Image (cartoon, rainbow, N blue to C red; front, side, top):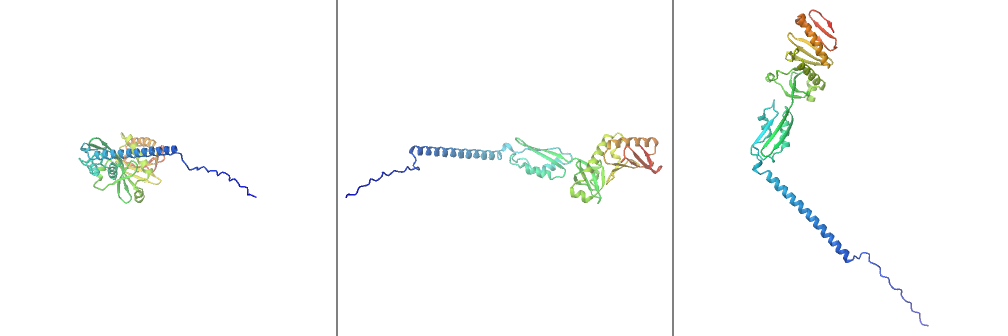
Length: 291
């Protein structure tokens, strides 16, 4: 018996999912070329721009048109402009754009009289330096007899030697402050500087009858506050802390009464710390009181 032949089932060809049509390949190549062209264009633009900046900067720092002809120093009262100019290291002929203003500012700020500096280039050939100096308030003589000039914020400016004191005769002398405490912070206590500032301001406002030049010494103590030696013969005036408008008003009345009675040479002390009550002591009365 003959074997029955079996028909083989047709083989189904699997689809190749990785096959890409020629059209897709062309699109990919086109996109790659466009991307390459954009990147190349950007790099070229950056290179050209950088070259322009480099060449421009090189031109600016070498052109004779921007050579410094003058250095102007403004705002100096205590400092000498020539000394400030020497600190800068600037000189005619330097290129205006090549100088480092930040370094120059730091050099000037090292001077103890300088509170701030602004430096401007004025094209084509000028540098203008604006100095803000620290304003002196008073002199302070510490408990080790060292004397310093202090500014309106209470910070030490410069030490004052005996030969320098003639230059600062217009400033009051504050005493009895602790040397180590002041030197540690580089300033007198904030409360003290504020009290001294208020007192000097009130003294200047009442200069028609109260002369700051007649004050021989200011003293500060805890908890007593501010005390001044005033007039000739000297009278101790205890002011304490704050309320200076009221205290000056009371002091004016007291000094007027003392002058009217002609007993100025007998008065030793005027205590205003408990204003509006005023305590007066002298030779004629050990503890008389007015208020």
